[in-house]
Length: 439
Image (cartoon, rainbow, N blue to C red; front, side, top):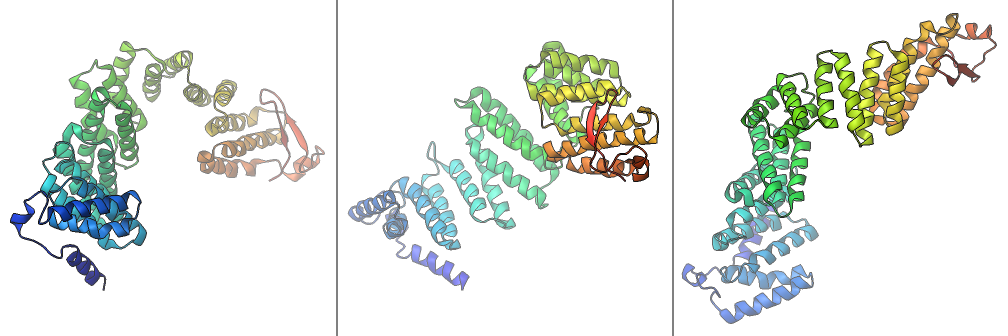
């Protein structure tokens, strides 16, 4: 029944086909009627009355295809809105016919020619035929051809949609990892050149941000892959500040900070522009080498030079992690608290404090009860961590489950006259007030 309706709709649309010689005329077989019908459908479209616009538009589309570009622009509006109103897939099929005829008769238009129209065709085919792999592949073909034809003139939205479709097809196993990475490289180049040459550079910044987000969540940005296409880019212009910033950012974002390329880029970037970010890059490089003194030195420099509280909080967090690994527990807490001052929602900082407390348990107090009571304060920090930062919930829960069995027992508490729910002060450098609970 569905196929019959689509066929019938198509037949109805193209009823009264005339000979090719007549269609070559701008006004078709009846110039007066063409102008009249164009006026009628245009008025209905202005009123957003797409259903009543359809018959008059159909006449012009069938009988005067060369009349004006507006036939296709308005035809797109009509078919899109009729589909939205009815959800009848026949209108999507007809929309594709509109684009085909647009290309046939106005494909050489200086601005809205074949390349431009293919971009619209691919975008709307993908948008309107969701969860259809065959349609997605077809749409990708139109979109990519649009990019090939338009080059630097390609609309930023077309580039974003093309990469989004490619990302979808990658997940479905319909395009290869190599093709996906190559497309990312092409579109990165497009965005970089657009930022420099375009009247609206923000649109190209948005393209870069969009494709970066998709690329780094696609599971293909492993260090070997990144090095394979970022390495030549760096080697071609190793002193270019923009290249250095981009490469270091991409490698750091993918946690590829222990490869030789990152070290080279970090050092060159710091020489040219010893900013907070450049100092942080070097800190990460030395951290991977376990050269902690140099790491701490560059982290402190990054903190001094940064005016971004979120970044500074991350730098303090790194210092806290290093201090904890070196068993410098007081220093670890100090740096973690500095991070929390700058970013109160940094759950990882609370986890560091909790771990520092737990690591000190054997050194606190005089007996097993004192030692075990420290875990109350430690678990308090893990609970706080997941309250302020849901992203650390899994790690916090693991630590809570690991340390809660080390709480004092009821028997131990009995001899201290401590009952469940009692407020207890944990002294020394920990200096926390907590609540008694037992294993």
